[in-house]
Image 1 (cartoon, rainbow, N blue to C red):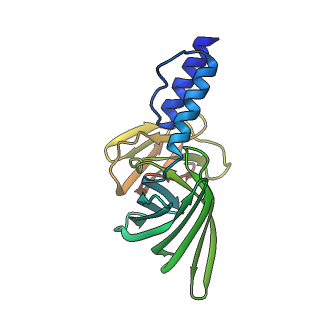
Image 2: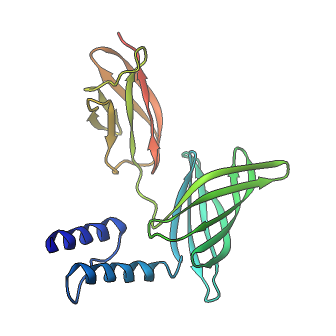
Image 3: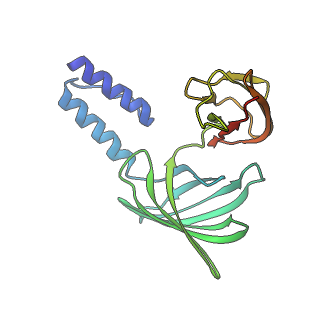
Length: 230
């Protein structure tokens, strides 16, 4: 059981992007204390890179934190594959409460101010509501802010029969010179080694009409397709 506990801790540290637990006794109690100390240290500050997604828009910014808890930063917001627009971030962090104000955000064709208040209690990030406001405009969106650098572009989704809605397995999906085959559940996915941008994607299957579409390859791109039977 000791080995299983140690291995579980190492895997958890790896998933959370934390250094492996080391030093001192290796019993379950010491491992739990070490992991708790690591997480406690990480939650003391929100300084560093953050990212999120709002619909098809990707939000990316970096924060600095003053001793009194004030935070500020700069970043970008990009809708689809459009050029990124600069944004500014100000706020406060009094653990666990993180309050941020975003200026320069363009959403649904208008410039808005975004406010976000959440509890930073996990090294995985902060989940709360982003409130977007402008003159005569207000919208509330569920948002998760992830700590760390923006992941690389990827693309995945699901293929289904346009008539029956059943999954289409064994289809060939090609984009950027790379090809994958859909699973029996109709899912396809490319490893995060694609270039960002708009590219032509092709889906072929002996029982279905070939499908060709332009797709936006982004860090969080998920695109489903309905195939027409021959």
